[in-house]
Image (cartoon, rainbow, N blue to C red; front, side):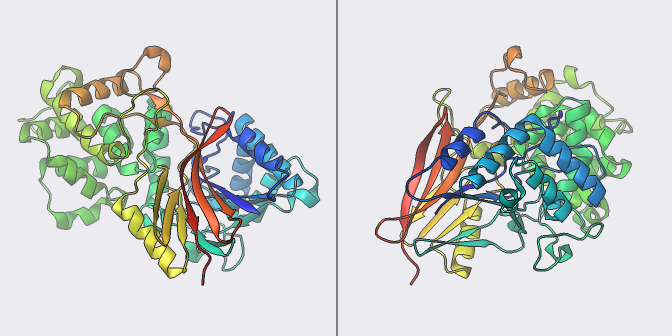
Length: 464
């Protein structure tokens, strides 16, 4: 049996917060796997965040009744329904489907929620029962042709999105309702990112995921007046203080969730690029009680504010922008495949701990591939909409153009003809296949127009 690994589908309920982009692409890929007659059947591992229980306006507490309602809404949406039916067909053809939990779909640990997903497969109970679910507290270790491959979502290495697996029932695929405290990243999605998308039509907020700090800073740069409405009074005071450097690091502990998500560090880094006049202008606009010297300034009429916002935006999206490469044409890849040092360090540590030849992660939304003697790393990427950004080192004028486009077209509607802030998709997956002579082949593929293109491939030796 060969193994196909995808992650970060973010299947939603069909509402205005949805970001899944693969409605027309994923079912044909699964149909191809279901129709395989040579080389064995296919196991599909959904490596976290494949359903998204955060893309709604419900309270962020783990409640079984509410989670079942959310699951029904997700499974009843047109896009999700088509994907789940395709999973059902693959199971009926003798394949396997495994949902591993991520930080956006911990509700899948509830047996009642799992039952909703099995019912949506469109298969007899005997087939639907083979859909399995795994917690993310420990990696999945695959044995493919004798080679060991460690598979995990990756949120365990992300402080903002780490799940409290101590609150999950030990050894069983179920969670304890009411006991789980959602991580800071999830709370920020609910309290800030979702409202900005719904009220201010800032579609781009989710297109920077999972860099929620960058998303908040982007919102602050593009529309500080809207952002401050959603921040608590204390949050406005703290952020304004950070911008003006009027508070000491010791007082950041009073900031609650804002500090908990690492916003302090991100904003201090962004602040380094601002002049005093620019910092005062942003702080005054954020806080209507700004000092007399700064005073509230009209955003659209202030050159100082525009420059400050452009610098803030550039800093906010720097990490995300570095993951992009300049597009030569519409079909060119727009993520670098080379992993960052941090990603590679996490992958190496996991491979060493579990005596594996390769490590497969998700979570970051950036498809990656690296092969070295004795070690390989792949990231499955994502199946959501993504946004093009200027290069990190682009001139300020380019960032001003980008900022203007976000402000004038926050929904990123293509008919409005933006030149920089465009959305696109890139559907990627990882394959692990037994090799004829022993061992395995690990490869990263892009699925486009009904065909798969290999982006990287390497042999894996059997474990000794």
